[in-house]
Image (cartoon, rainbow, N blue to C red; front, side, top):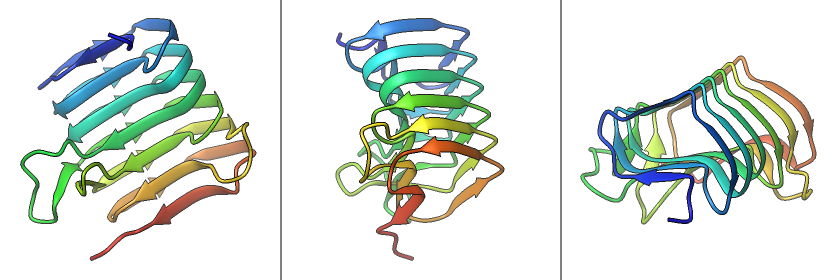
Length: 168
């Protein structure tokens, strides 16, 4: 694997891990359901620090630094809900995301399946988008996001938060 950790989990817990110098992703949970990635330190990844595809996952209390992208939450491409989403009900909270070359947090669409109903709260975004314009601390496709109580410091991208492409 080119990742620090890459699995197809249900109710997986990744807690307190230290991952450094991952070639691609620090932690990649593909087709995840009700999983928790918490209290991890991910440093120096050429890809994403934490990448999670699926529903009702929690990415809480991690420190992600010196990565291309901090955290990505996306659809998994299987068993969509009534809104054609395969990623819903996830929480991204109380993380420190710093020194990303591009976006700090991406809420993404994969094969037309979007992330929806995601809570983004209490995160600290610092020195984001060091590659410059065209990136953001938070970039999202889709709808039904709650973005609250986050801190944005030294975001060199075009915008702190970009929400685009949503339909009702």
